[in-house]
Image (cartoon, rainbow, N blue to C red):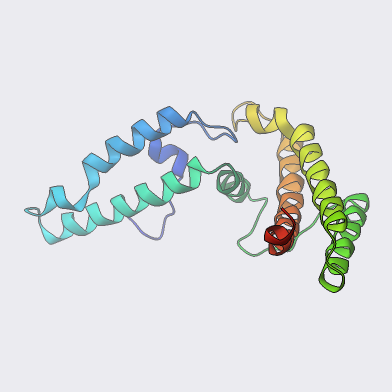
Length: 183
């Protein structure tokens, strides 16, 4: 395998490029590849074949981990479609969403100075409402978009969803610092 060329994880498993994958088919392909490429099955092979099986086994594990996780899969699809660079700037976030994030972050900062169960529940509730709204607004795209049938505008909406979700994950991480005290 040429390490200069990055293989497409979907092609590696024989699956269509999509935001939603058949997890049972993915697991079957993963297990089949595991049996085929696992280094333990190539101990009597040449050193070149052993190295190749190790590379393919590693690829199999990484590809499975990526495609089986909805967030990693979304990031991967955006990346292979040229909409996301490895550490590119966050963009295309609406001002209204950023204002909502700022309000929630202000509630979290208030918790740091004056821990209050009511304030915690308010911040938690606001973040959950925002998260549910995001999931609902993009649910159809996340479950139906494929490279073969999906539109570029739907993929751009998925990109915006990806960045908004990253903001929400940071908020949830900050709120988790207070969870044991208030839940």
